[in-house]
Image 1 (tube, rainbow, N blue to C red):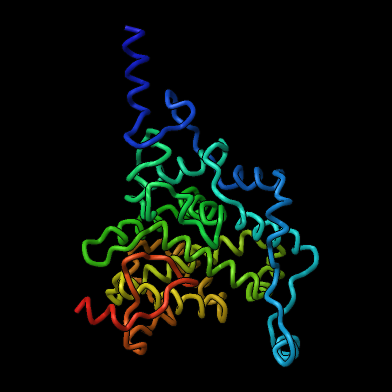
Image 2: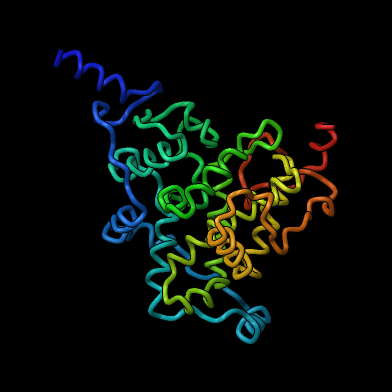
Length: 312
């Protein structure tokens, strides 16, 4: 009986796929956002730090205009925290790192409700909205920070329901979109807003960077879901919706954060019932749709006038 029980426990924790975790006979313990963050705070990120560009350089008239009318500079005491975030965004997914594996397993379990570990590679990652069987191939431009943001979304009790709501929307039979890839694009937007010092005022006010970056990520994802649901967007609208979000995140992050606070404090979990300012439809003004074959993101998608004609 003991041997049969051991064999059954092993079967429970093995899921189909092209690979598995180092110890598939036991369930990997969930990891909190703070624990994962502490890992990176103590890890050797020297190679990643060499690749970061903390701010966007300005020259000539642009430099003068930025000095006179641009956002305030980030306080010196917060620059180390900002650079840590940017360094994590340069880190690749390492499947052999136990912490990296726990982050992935936690995201999978919290989104799907599964109690069991999943395989290292497999189509189950595509079910979560990655483009392939290996999540690491979709992190270009956001690095491991994209996974930390997903971890934050599913492990914070205040935003877990939001994560589930957006995940369900991403599986809609008409309005479907790749949930995890879309999340990576949201992280890219936040990174760019941070580098362009658009978040400095709020970071200085809160005397911290990471909570502001996390909140803006969740707030931007919330806005995307609201626009997507209420304006009946589809994957063909993705490029323009993301570009609109990027503009808003840079110009008025305070508005996005205020909307998130409204959503969380009022306890309203139906996105369509929320009243958000600034959620306007810009896609019609562009007169065309982007390609939908290989969903990539803000930095990569360009309008393709021929694709719309083919789709019609």
